[in-house]
Length: 251
Image 1 (tube, rainbow, N blue to C red):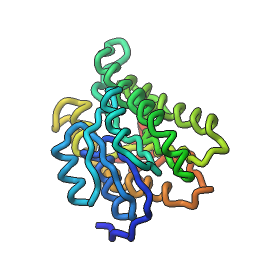
Image 2 (cartoon, rainbow, N blue to C red):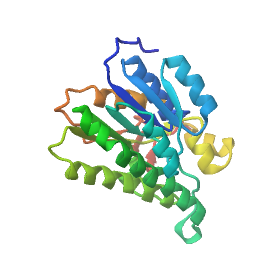
Image 3 (cartoon, rainbow, N blue to C red):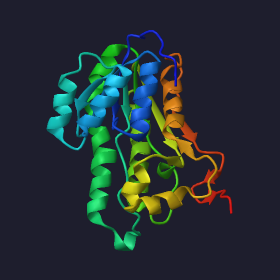
């Protein structure tokens, strides 16, 4: 549990905040003194979390133009945008690609992130010291078998962050990418693999995979540096994982 600090006066928006990394990030930023606006589709879970951390819950579907517009219209100020909403919904090889899963991966991870960034960039500029954080993945830096829809989407996030940084250089907005490796959360692997048993196998024998709070800690650190310091890319893995394909497991 993090000790809540006095308010910084800064407003942080976190997408996909109803669970996992998003919920942990909202909790941590609130503890750091940010006024946190939580966005997600599951308003019941979102509201419960917002009440617990003293944040504000607003319904948000990043795949829907109208939902994004309605969400952003309720914001008077934004200093930090954490583009966290994302996920994966298949592990099929390219030869057997499920195009619906590919469409969902791009709609949520890529186009949803573009919608939110485009909509809130004027407010981030107006803040005079804005931050846009992209929650990517090591899957956006290297490919692996059976992960093409997700790796393609996260590669897109990586180049999106790089491109935006080039386009707005000299403006008062930092562009930050956090690329986690193996993170054990309640829903990611279950959504991807279709069952809790298969999800549990991903982490079986791995000593201390990252948890959502570890990634939230990294995000909080990057957005609380002096504003002339930009953490372009932070790759974070558990010590048991040297690469996507190299993971130490207890026998």
